[in-house]
Image (cartoon, rainbow, N blue to C red):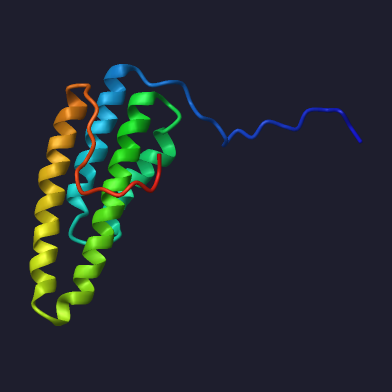
Length: 130
């Protein structure tokens, strides 16, 4: 057995903490990112998931906003998936449209809150990650 320390993995880095301005910028972009992918179930989670995985350890503000955005987008993806299953009857189109409106409205509200440096909790959101 050797007492030598293992080699450092150059790809495993949490990175330096973000400045408050950068945290606000990235949080705003992550909230807005869900709007651009909301037309496809499960794809709406991609910006929030990438932001959560890459930025969660770079500051408490960005961690809170990425977790909140990811929880909301996962909840909406579940709703869109159920709506897709209900497309056989006319109600699926109506629920999908309502969910798209909810995603757009609440993502804009969350992005504005993030840009002001405030916290935000989405209504109608289940908590999957923290």
